Image 1: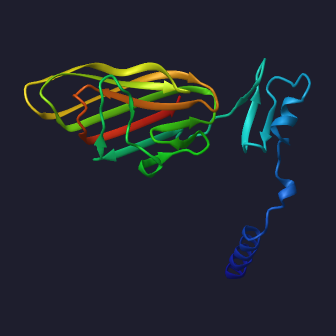
Image 2: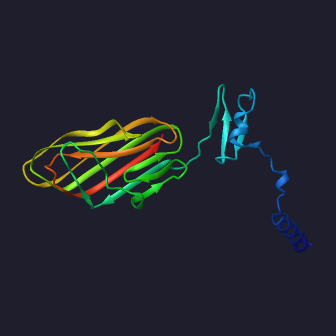
Image 3: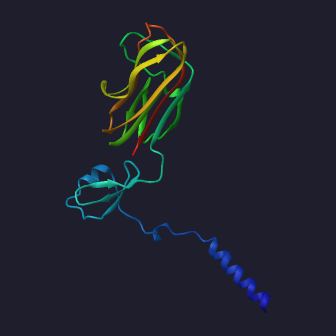
Length: 212
């Protein structure tokens, strides 16, 4: 009797575990496009909808719809070892980084649109960092600038000063800055090296941008 009862319990459990869940029995939330969401008149505070345009959840607060963040990387990183660094007096050049040097990218937030050029896809606050180094910086007091350009205009310095070294040697600089950016803003990291027009050997070049 015990053996029969055990077999019966196992058979019922196995049949239940293999049953298909009816998708109509799962509680859902409204699914709307961005246009449809923005057309809602006087939505209730605390309402939640699924935006089919960007495949994200949105929560309504007192004044607007807010996208609900998920645990994901909102970062783009470009990194390169080696290469060359052209120079001219007080002339800006792009860091030698292209789409082929991407090590991490979230395509919902960024597009690589050119050499050392990244297009922002979503509005928000962003932390921007850059790095430049060379294996053969000439001796002397050599002016350097590492700057952030937004939509073609210089907007801030990651670092600037004079590299004062007694003999040709390794040298580098880095820095970080934060901006509030809009969708479709274009970010460039550019440098100046006043070394009498010599082309230097790049050691490391890096750009990192993170939405915070």
